[in-house]
Image (cartoon, rainbow, N blue to C red):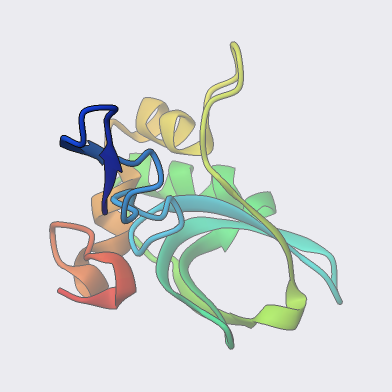
Length: 139
């Protein structure tokens, strides 16, 4: 969006507003690795977003309590088996990106360190293709 302003000598000057049409991509897009905190029952789930909408959240991943078991399975060469789940939005209390905090590794980094594999392609390849999909679930 451009705005026009007039100078003292009536020249028109265009300026680009700080409030331009948004170009940012949502951090909570398909393929993003997240930790979802759920209610009723209270649990935490780690995985990749497959779809996020008003009705709920679809993820492929595991309960955080099972994270180490999954990493051990992958490390020992067993086939990758993580659940594809849908949580109705009324159960989603909080969702955060799986990012490192200070000296603490993210779960994705811990997974890669333990298994030698990047978890993102493992989690999304069957559902979003190799590119992780685009906002809105497009391929």
